[in-house]
Length: 296
View 1 (tube, rainbow, N blue to C red):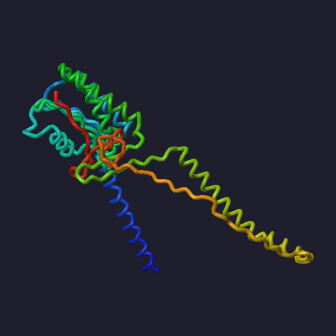
View 2 (view 1 turned 90 degrees about the horizontal axis):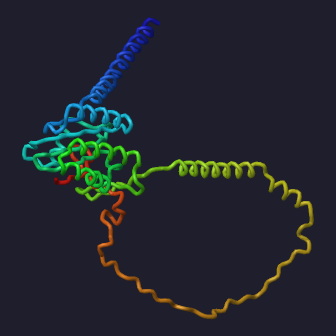
View 3 (view 1 turned 180 degrees about the vertical axis):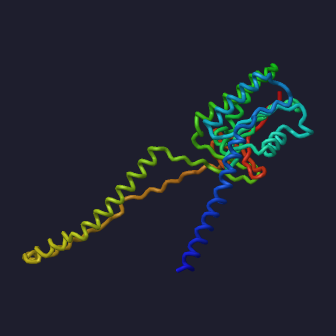
């Protein structure tokens, strides 16, 4: 009896220790996530914004992050250390460990005064929202402002553009095209009416099966046959055979010429899919990155 009590006490102690240490990493991760969420997201190394403008952008970004559950960053630089705008933006995002979730989803906007280029870098699921045509549209809107030296207005255009396209949702037929591997990842989304239809079909199929089983076990047909067997239902029954011939009256042969695919310019890239929902991406340090830049 004592051995059983001792064994039970040791088991309870081990379970308590396991639960305690199991909760510690989760609590630390949550605390670390909250800490990262409150960190600055405007890095004005080129000193293009005033203090009030940086505070305005920080406030807007925090609101966007809560709504989208994605990271949003603004970076300016007058010295990229010899890196192209693309490489500098990706390195900055990776080294600062930006992003939310396992796919590090978020977006970074770089104003590169060294290479005179602005660059938008969507990462993770943000590529589904900021397709090639969408981030190009944001750069189009921001080009006039940045070419006039209004860098704050350019940053506002970036923030408003990201918010607008996020609220518009992922476009129909959206797909990621990996420029390194040629792989195509099509976004699948189930609408509420599709889910409702699937449920109705499942219920109807289940009802049909249940009804069939109930009908078989009720033995309605068997009882009917037993009653009819008492009747002379075979009386006056006979078979009549009739002869029937099928004669071929006419035949027509039609020839259709199928034109060859000449591979003209009307074919869209990315496996023949529409380019409107295409996001050209590649993988860097386990992150799916897309986007592009515009010289100014």
